[in-house]
Image (cartoon, rainbow, N blue to C red; front, side):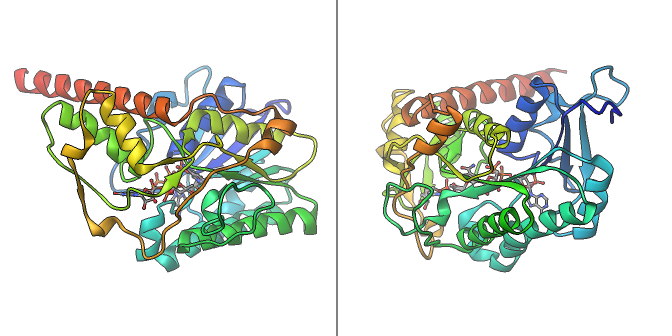
Amino acid sequence: MTTDAHVRRALITGITGQDGSYLAELLLSKGYEVHGLIRRSSSFNTERIDHIYQPAQAPDHRLFLHFADLSDGSRLVTLLNEIQPSEVYNLAAQSHVRVSFDEPEYTGDVTGLGTIRLLEAIRAAKIETRFYQASSSEMFGATPPPQNEHTPFYPRSPYGVAKVYSYWTTRNYREAYGLFAVNGILFNHESPRRGGTFVTRKITRAVARIKAGLQSELYLGNLEAVRDWGYAPEYVEGMWRMLQHDEPTDYVLATNTAYSVRDFLQFAFEHVDLDWEKYVRFDERYLRPTEVDALIGDYSRAKDLLGWEPKVHTPRLAQIMVDADIAALEVEGRRYIDQVQS
Ligand code: NDP
Ligand code: GDR
């Protein structure tokens, strides 16, 4: 860790996730020293950030990883004291909506209470820092689209409920303690680094495998749900801009377009000249007890105040993800052949 007082220092919780990995890349490219919180795991969980990690003796070593967990408040205080970040991005969460119905209490603990533990740790450590909270369009739930910063919340899952708790906690710390705390209310955003159990990546991986003759069926739940899918690298740029603004407020990031899961299937399969209807099967295990039917975000405030606008829209996003999954499969195949031949 540098002792140079001019170096900007950021802490990212959830650095091993999709957004955390893109945000770490962005901040490193801007000259930040980046600290990431990682969980101890019995298997490797740093795959998304291995390419930016350097050994401690490397001359430009600016990425530091620390074992911690949002369920462990005292560890958060110790870490914040040690790191003294000027920006904290709280991206860690049990982020899967369907799983939150299976593990509601755990989801409430990490995705909800985790935020207040981190905010209290900031107060306990008495540090001056700006704070970003990864809020979600899932908070709007059953409220019809289009949704913006004034739309009432009506969450439809334990995950959505936990995110509403974190949203209000963040606002309360802004109002009660004058903390520069911001909610980014982000609509779905995807990429080749998206977790494999979210619907877009599940589809694009299957397309690559079906095209290669490795898979013949794809089991999905509700195909009618409408989502506003954007491209993750553009959204992390928006997060950073929120913390550079003069005043703390809350922002929606979205593309303001509406496509169904069925549409996404069409875009992904037609990119490799396949007909999705021949491969997709229904499995009720992927239905949710309560569904969010339609999310379409109005990002006017982010455009006006931050100059933020999405460039990649859902049809192109599906192609980017399919291409990346085909490329990844080819690498895997070559590795396998090398192993067999050696
Ligand atoms: P991911 O699921 O890819 O990443 C979640 C991250 O949180 C991982 O690094 C995970 O670590 C970490 N994590 C989970 N539980 C804990 C815990 N108890 N303590 C510490 N870290 C933990 O999510 P995304 O990158 O897609 O999303 C980032 C954030 O933005 C999340 O809070 C999500 O809810 C929110 N969000 C995401 C949207 C999207 O469309 N992607 C839209 C709106 C909000 P590990 O790798 O060890 O599992
Ligand atoms: P979501 O994303 O719930 O919007 O939450 P997900 O990709 O899981 O579901 C989107 C829609 O697809 C339908 N669906 C399926 N979903 C999954 N995962 N698997 C299936 O097989 C399947 N079949 C149909 C779902 O019912 C749903 O309607 C994501 C997460 O990243 C959250 O953390 C984030 O806050 C929100 O986006 C915005």
